[in-house]
Image 1 (cartoon, one colour):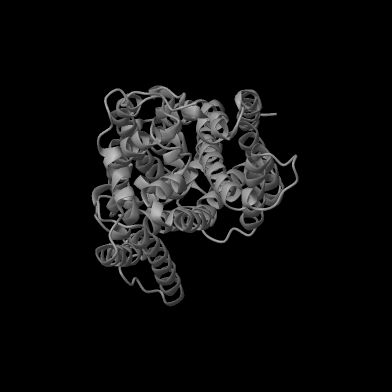
Image 2 (cartoon, rainbow, N blue to C red):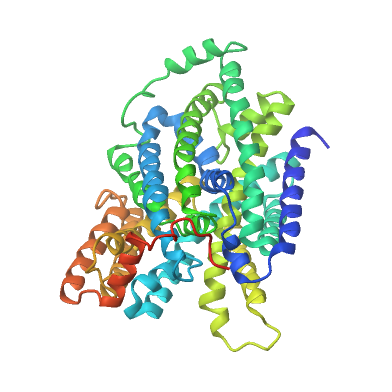
Length: 493
């Protein structure tokens, strides 16, 4: 077994072992879904970064960087702003509410803020979460299976099955606690792999000289333009989707619920933003170096993978590929857990079940169901990795951004308005996405702007006609200012 294969197999086995070990500490569904609020700031940094740096970045976005150069900052810049909103604003609000109410996911958050239609809004938000998360989950499965298929020289279907079994198994066993612990290990591997890959790629592009490699990259046409033929103006503006999607991603909500205190969230903010800037900056020269080294890249191939196999020393290539696999594994596990949690709580636990079918069985059965469904869809590879991730972001932003932020900032925001906004925003985004795809148009620039606009209009109009109840306003006041002594109280239980 060579070093490349050994690194990937070892990573999969370590992740599986962490999940199995963590299962010993999972006593109930609160442990399973939110790690019972026991995570310090440094574990928050690891899990936050690992779960958001996906294979879509290392494979899809790196390929896009190779063709479009620094125009890719059109996607990276709004993402960084989204992180600031998410950690510095949404996370604090969510964490404070969790000190007063039992909140284990985003659907619970909407339930308590919009109590008048609590069960309805929980059901609607659950459907949107599963519908929006399937594309990004498929993207990670495709990425991992593609890497394993190339390295082990096995069929894509065989490698997809193996990856699906490992990811579903360690997520199913360890829950959020296992996912967060595995994320820490995976993020270290990811970061080290990136640190060695960038100078090695520049050196390979310069035939052994890093500065020569950068000079060759600098002479490539159009790499310093705002727009390119592959990333026209409407695609550039469409990348603003990340500003609206990042703050409402359900898997981030669960990360903040796992925080030990509010102070741990605040400490993690500048560290996460700094690491994000570094990682995003590094992907662009990687893609451009790949463009020089592999000018005739085959369709379906990825610069990062080809460079790791053909142009890096064996150990460096092993680290680089392990980094990609780590990014995909961490995103797979966290999204799989949240989607499975939603299926379990909103479907399985509402059905008549035999006495032995406990909530913990239901939690794990939800993960298994989503994992099997994703495996079946990933087998046909419906879209490219990068665009699957973008589609998921558009659906989340269209469905949740307006209800969440108006719910935080506007006391009159009502339950009826929130439900209508979720449905209208999501359906508008899907409609525009399908029309754009069928006719090659760019109506509303991007589907996300159609979803956001319709969601905002509907929620404001309905909330004015039917304002929030006193109980709903009290929830908002609770999050804005807690009684003395609650600010640093650990998660109850």
